[in-house]
Amino acid sequence: MSHEDELTPAERDALARMPRELEAPRMLEERTVKALRAEGALTPARWSRRPVPRLFAVAAAGLLLYLGGLATGQWLATRQTADALKGLQQNNAMEAATLVQRTGSAYAEAIAALSRIPAGGDSQYVVQGQEVALSALIAAANQIVKLNPDDHAAVRILQALEHGDSSAVREGTRRVVWF
Image: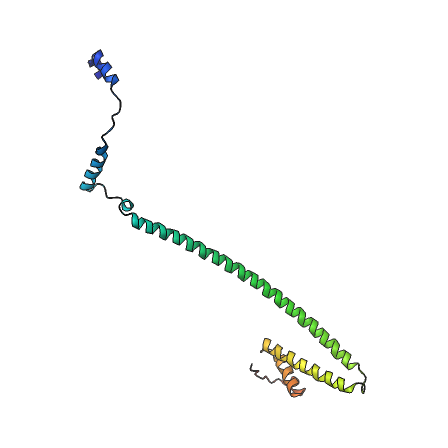
């Protein structure tokens, strides 16, 4: 037997007309929350009570994002710049080697042309050309020794050129060249 069977038809009509839900009074929620907090069942919300620290936290998070992006951008730019400089240095080294090769070939051709001048003709210019050729050779040998101070052959050639002594080339002595 159910409870509806115990009701009269008038009671059933009155029950059917009743609203299924009732609106709670406005202050009920506030009183309930206040009572739960008083008993320690609810703690106050951290950010709702302190709007100023939340503002600082948001500002700090924004600043960290900005600085992180800035650092990442700088790192990427530095890496790209380093790659570009490495490429330029490789190109510069290749250009310098090509220039040395061309200049050396031109030097050798000029010395050959100087040696083909007959003895007695324009002798003062031949002597001047020999002096200039020797000075250029000494300067080149100095630069080779600066480039690689441990190159024994270059050091011996430089010693022979500076002293005008071809025996220094044959000797195995090593000289320290200070710059």
